[in-house]
Image (cartoon, rainbow, N blue to C red; front, side, top):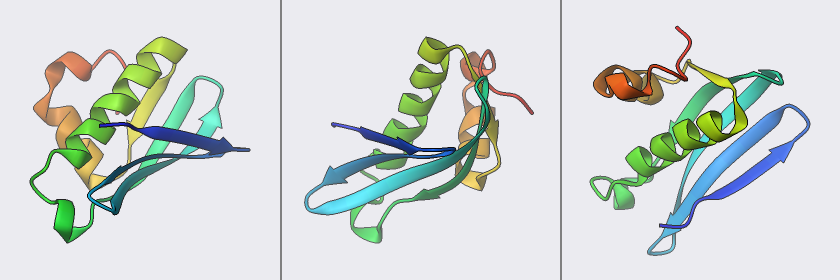
Length: 93
């Protein structure tokens, strides 16, 4: 699954299009070393296809590669962060 990353000023978005539908995860950059993931949207047509999980995993990989932390304000991302203790190196509660 290809994930597209867009960032303009302090706002960013990860998105994946599958079968003509797009899921997205949005964030705000509060500093060069911290992003706040504030929203995840996966259309009903993509539920159960792993799109949300792929977006969350991608955000974690980006944080590791970029040397920043994630505040998981979005309920989906917060639940994923609790589900995967191995992500705690980039999660800031």
